[in-house]
Length: 364
Image (cartoon, rainbow, N blue to C red; front, side, top):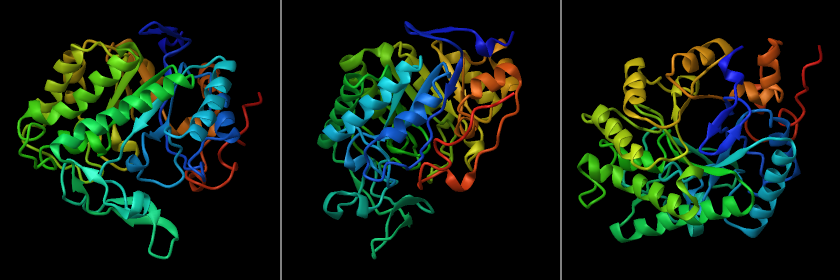
């Protein structure tokens, strides 16, 4: 039997299999509040060993895309309680992915049209946000020029993460995943080519890792390290993340620090399936050798490649994204070697319940 379908102990949370539904933005929350369709969408996919929710902005400041459900208002919390109850009733487990996009945002999404925040005041070249144009029409907009967070304001952003994590556990999430991948706020501090600071959050590897590790520590203290995951994208190039001289050393230093913290898991985002570059094979093996905790990755896995990665002990869990969109019963399809239906790409983002909760289960 494939190891994909074996149970797994995730920091005390018993997963019924090693397949994780990867986080995927769907932009269906027209008022930024999860609703009954959101609950149905996730409950339909609860046969995954673990679901990681779509990116959930921790504050309005952290939002870079319209129609994404936040986790900071009472209405949003009520909506997420409906989601977690539905997933648990269906026998599943779900973590909330906590999201702050940093400079990958637009002034139309920010309070009073203020600039988004980042490690830097440099704009993310050739990057877009899903926001409003000057006429109030929604669409892809060039990212706005950010303001660099002053040193004494960084603690406030850390506190925003902590409050979001507390909110998530309060409404029934089994844990939280900190979104540190794909060029968002964490990476804007980590990347030496983006981070141009001269304070204790810039310059050396230790300084550039300081902010994300402070968030990991603060959230772990608030909700328990066994309920905290972290997603990163080493050597990722999305959202104006260019190469930098200390790149390999930076990510290996991150592994050393994470080993000290005993979080629930580390999640690698391989970007070759979402328009970016893949993590080099030698880097994945280096990270696996350096990191002693539970490791998962997302990057176009199917049953055979996922089973190989687990059997070789390269990974402990396999995260799968887009096939879950069009196959709510993906685990059952993989188990029984039933056909996997292709998704409707036109319905990935925004729109109605069509292409969201209306994909059928397989009928033999």
